[in-house]
Image (cartoon, rainbow, N blue to C red):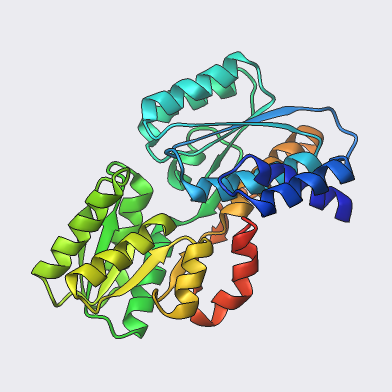
Length: 327
């Protein structure tokens, strides 16, 4: 089993954004172990289609989990993504046309995905939703949804801000129209005893993100917390704080190596981890279980992978895992 896990992890990370010695080491480990499956079921093909933009490290971690489970389960795993909902839908249709054996989709903009998910089900292709769209998943006919309840995660942020004595917070939304992002900020506003404001930015333009946050901090010195909705935006918010001369705490949703370092050195206050590795891993595993044994997990309710509030005391233990791309 150790050889299987080493092979899976090496194969998964080789195709993602990590580079250098770690990738080479994992590729060698994969070749040495042979990438053997732990089961003798047919080699089914499972496709994952997400709303990720290019270079989004969060989805690299989701893919890492999916790739590792795919090796274990003797699955051919294919991946497509597009931040534009219509193009994401078209990618799903292309995999339906290819007659894949299972589909994993995110529903950040559910209205654009409803019809194509229905087409998949009509074609007899089982669907599992991940990350976004927990409320729509069952209605669309998906077997299960794997992710965190975004409203609950937002409420956890509000409660953590209260514990830290914050009075005025800025919630930075980097993708307009993403229902999950709205739910996060709304959840935080619900439990936060102070004042929470939303700031919409263009997430594909980091200089714009930085200047927008910087401008807001300069114009309102009472803001004592900035909450970003994705790990890649936290360091940008830190730069904006420095340029604005603000003392606001920077907090974020999601975890990666840079966020873990920021938590450890105190640059960041806390992070809300939804464990994306689990979202990819469990999605593949649950599709395999359904194909093999007609198993369905969740009973029509989401299978939760978060939220987990991560602070400075947790950072050192998690750094190793973030560096290898599994947290």
